[in-house]
Figure 1: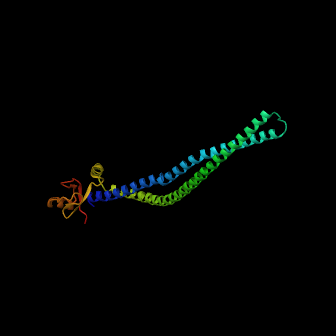
Figure 2 (figure 1 turned 180 degrees about the vertical axis):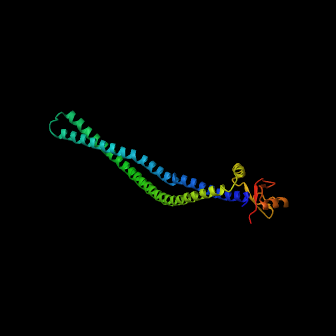
Figure 3 (figure 1 turned 60 degrees about the vertical axis):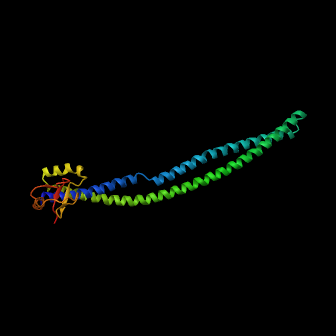
Length: 234
């Protein structure tokens, strides 16, 4: 096996490794982030923020109603107990009772409206929570599939790394250094196949002399255009 062929084998392994490692990064990002779940959770949070103050207002209004009712009952008991005989005082108490009862009616109307708002907000929260559960189930299903793919890719990467070690051992230290330096400059593809006397990457036709050198494989021969190392694959 010529050095160009050994480098081409190494490149094939490296390209496969790069592809699988990039996919692993994508999977890792997906496993750590789910926009669908995040959006659904935001809807739940918003629904809760709407419902919480409504429930608080309802409790306050119910307490005010009870206080008003207790005060009305107490005033009525005093009025009809017979202990109050002053006409002016009795008249004031009657006016107070009438005012309390009127206010009680207004409070009941407010409470009814508020309860309808609470019911609507509770419905919105229930819908948001159901959507969140659906999103979580979908995410868990995708999560499971991604974990399986991740495990398979990790095994493949491990096997490729072992193959790379073996392939690199067939390359001289000097040529391995050249290959390593060229990779980032040539988009991870520093080796090109010479096919029909043309470079498989840039397409430039080479001379017969270069074709002969590539076929012989005694030294590394470079494309006259893109300067990649040329290899002849039978």
